Image 1 (cartoon, helix red, strand yellow):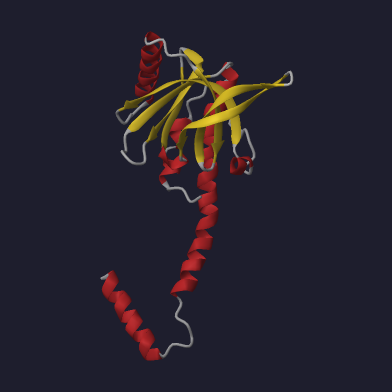
Image 2 (cartoon, rainbow, N blue to C red):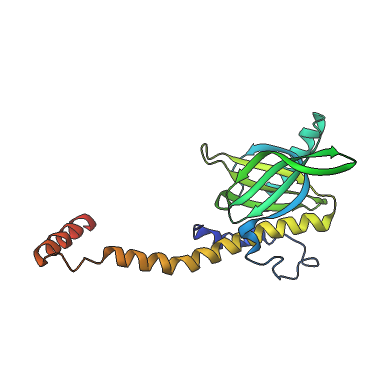
Amino acid sequence: KIMPARIASRRKDYNLVDDTYDNGLPLHNDEAFQHGITFKAKYIGSLDVPRPTGRMEIVVAMRRIRYEFKAKQIKKRKVAVNISVDGVKIELRKKTKRKNRTWEEPKWTLMNDPVYRIFYVSHDSHDLKIWSYIARDGSSNVFRCNVFKSTKKSQAMRIVRTIGQAFEVCHKFSQQQQPVNDNKSVKSNTPKSSKSSSSRRREEEKIVEETD
């Protein structure tokens, strides 16, 4: 996947983990993001929000969503959070019992946000088990804040850092693919030797007119 160059410029938005827990080392191998890394969490809820400009706005949105969904007595739902180069996919989990065995399997997809549409990911400093990310809808361009709760603080921090690392990996892949794409474009623009010099001259004049 070739990701926009602006991903690198937004790196600072993901340095939101307490330094005492973050040693700066990558959590996963880059190859792991090709298949996806899955975590378990509980989905609290989502609301549309204005485009945030800072961390405090994200925290305010997180707390408002928690309050509103709790006031409406909407229960948290168990979800699987899959993070890959394709983005963040949230799937509902349900327990299946058969012959004295119990396992959880994805039920259906709640949301599937490409990496380049995710703008911010953060914790709630009052409760580090709570984390959220804000993504922009592809059709309406509306920003949506999705809030989750992990069973442990360390797990929530791993999820936030993993989403941040997904941006780094996508940017790295895009840089690796760029020289290949440049070589392809050069080859495709090279005139074939079978063409006459007059036909090549007409093509060059046409390109100059289009670029002018």
